[in-house]
Image (cartoon, rainbow, N blue to C red):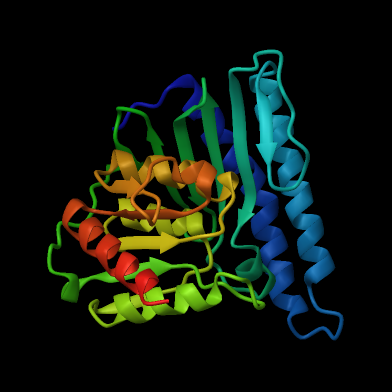
Amino acid sequence: MARTSPNMNVMQQAARKASRRLVRDFGEVENLQVSRKGPRDFVTAADVRTDGMLRDLLGQARPNFGFMTEESEDVVGEDPTRRWIIDPIDGTANFMHGIPMFAISIALEEMGEVTAGLVYAPVPDEMFWAEKGQGAYLNDRRLRVAARRNMGDTIIGTGIPHLGRKENPAYMAEMTSIAAECAGIRRMGSAALDLAYVAAGRFDGVWESGLAPWDIAAGLLLAREAGAMVSRTDGGADPMNNGDMLAANEAIHGRMLRLIRNARRSQ
């Protein structure tokens, strides 16, 4: 059985406790699909409530740590070198539509580096977690990225820009280029789960732009600890703070990087 640090124990306990109410809320969202008003206000309240629960639970266990979360302002802790990076519901649109592809994402950043991360999908009860230098796990099972080297055999995850976002034309060129060479592209609606699926070998690679640190802080560590190469889509470093990420095994990472570069040159 995998050993977890005290910090990881705190993270997992907080995620599981917060998820109990979240799963009940999800059941109510499914009922609201047929309502004329729809579930939007209810989901917003669930997002904020889950954020508050996680902050309370983590704050009680580690009162000196700061916070960066999607739903509230950043808080600098008494120990300014450590902070939690939280997305209470990554995949909010899925949650709102009764689609069970969403997750709680929690990362611990120390001295500017993410040292622990988890992505918890409460409906299937899948706890993806990793600590720096200790590998990545799904519940108690060690994870490794897929070993496929032929691009034609791969399933690639992505996040498609929506509502007329400025990335759309460039992204469509990238997707056309990658789709022409892979076995399929999947848009799951949660960047955190996309990266967890790369770590688990379910996806062979993933790329996306326009992300926030809380979307990918935990997932990037998971992918790295499972053996993935992680970079920006231009090959540069620091995808978490850039908001632009590409993750895959070494062979597929290199091929995807070339395809994306060629697509951008064609624009």
